[in-house]
Every structure is written in structure tokens, then in C-alpha cells.
Image 1: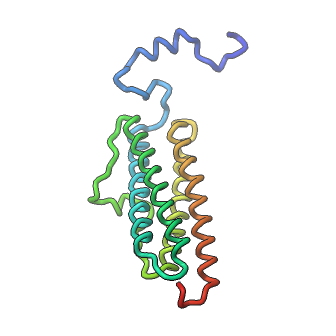
Image 2 (image 1 turned 180 degrees about the horizontal axis):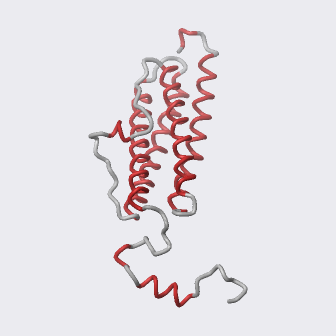
Image 3 (image 1 turned 120 degrees about the vertical axis):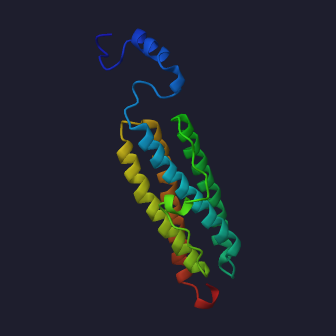
Length: 185
């Protein structure tokens, strides 16, 4: 295989795969600091859980003439944030870690805040702010992971893409609600 020097020969791959099989998916080729990655992913998990809780509260608390569209977005986003949390938890386990679902310290582990908002406009703003925090945070995480953990990086990039969509949705809702007479917000 002289014309493919970047590939490890098959026999070497087979031999390495038989070593340390108790590590599961973590092979000799894994180059990231696994414990640090697990900690980072647990912070992202906390962020997603806080976002689920905030979106669910906003879904139930939103009222007024202009609330129906926002409520639908809040519920959809809550469900998608839960999917993100599940993806992160699964990856943490693949890396030999334990996903931290403990409610104790959840807010301090999360990058986003849990802000209730007293009216629909505030709820939308707080969700937009939280999405913007997640976008910057997840972009940094994906960059940090780089080629050292391409699987975790891809998960973070997939979540990041959806967080950008969420931010666009919230920005559109905010623009729409700001055009309404103040008694409808």
C-alpha cells in the first residue's frame, strides 16, 4: 500500500484493536484528554437541561394573543434541547464517563442561565440570550476538540447548527412581538 502511506496497515489495526478492549470505543488513536472532554460535555449537558427546563416553563407560562406561535416554538425547542442532552449523555458514557444529571449544582454547571421572564417578550429575549451563549460556547468546544476527538466535535457541531436555528427563530419572534401593540405582549 505504498500509494496510501497515511493508512495504518491492517495487521497493526487488528493487533491494536485487541489491546485494552476494556476501554470500549477509546482506542490508542484517541488523542484528547478524556477526563477533560467528559467534564466539558457534562457542562454542555447541564446547559441543555437548563434550556429544556426554561423552554418548558416558557411554553406553559406564555399567554396573550401573540403567544400561540411562541408557545409552539418553545415546545419544539424544549424537545430538541432534550435530544441534545441525550446525545451528550450517550457520548459521555462512550468515553467511559458518567453523565451528571444531578439537580444539585445544575445551574452552576450550565453555561446558560435559567431566567423565567415575566412576560412573553422577556421570555423570548432570555431564550435568545441563552441560544447565543450556547452558540459561542459550543463553537469554542468544537474548536478545542478539533482532530483530537472528531466524534465529540461532530456532535457539538450538530448541536451548534441547531442552536443557531433556535437563535434565528427567537430573533424572528422578538422582531414580530416588537411590532405588536404593547398590550398584546
